[in-house]
Length: 490
Image 1 (cartoon, rainbow, N blue to C red):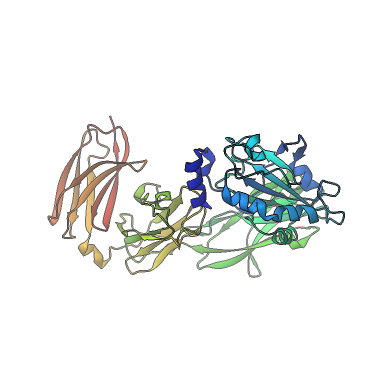
Image 2: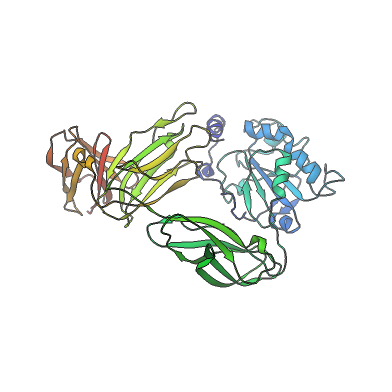
């Protein structure tokens, strides 16, 4: 939906601070709200959920063609007729009475005339023929992290939310059947795994515990099982009301290889069906040497993609992006960035960001990323994510053979410096080396081509005009890059 929204925002002259956010991930707890429809009727989300309804929220804008197409399809109206609340306008006498549908016009720049189809910022009359409630209120855009129109959420009785998209009435109702609701008196449930999945050291196992019983949940034993053996556990205590949640750290595990663990509630419980979840955890992959290659293939919206590589002390080692956009769906293979790491056998973290919040493979080209070592082994990879992805890996202990054609020995002194800094490095590439000074928001504040002379190079940089702060000194020769973090004081 991203491309459509970008075009329409420009055409309609609409600006919205929420368009840079990622939508709420499926499995999130839906924020509660109390809102009135255009007829003055008030609704509270949690009250409807407590009364057994699954709530469908269609967040749209009157000027949005895909929103209008979905509205005109009649799928939400069919859902309302056959499964909506008994006795409400347009609802069948044979309704299953277990679904509530809301249209939420979520753009604050539109008005009542636009809803009625008589304004200048609309696709048509949204009111006539719509029996389910229409709410004209942009206040949900922020707590529901609205990223594009339409965004359609389904909210179950236990408050768990799923972004379902513009699906059919039958598909909506099929999702209703998979919803979890409270049962029994003492009933803890595990909703999701929330910790790391790979690490250079021990992994904290973190889960979301929810009270799915009628009485307050005050205690539960949670264990991490490797086959039939318990490898970590916690005796949790607290006071959770029905449907309240809490993130619980169960303990630490240190897998020697990728291992599928079962995390489960083992204390007395009225419903065992919601007591366990599975999660594969693994040690971070180790690189074969000190040099790695960052390989990025952007989708049509390359300007949304940036990345960074940090060492164990969180110092920035290398970064890249944003990149250029295309005029149509497709991909661009960006020049690989070779990075010579300076910390042997050290934990490094690679993170790729998408400023829109829909990753690199969301229908505008199958974009992807990979971090590979000198032997071609893939340390990290992906592309289908929301606002960020990546992970950790261990650097090797020795440079690889390709260092013979690399930039190495980079040093900057003094560090910190006040005005003048000297950059030392060996250029063994045979091509021109470029020095860049980059500030911490990614702006290049200085660049110099120092030629292709081989051996030890000494280059002086005058930082008199720079503001005090942290900078990265990048030395690049073609696809080869190495970096050093420096501090400028005034």
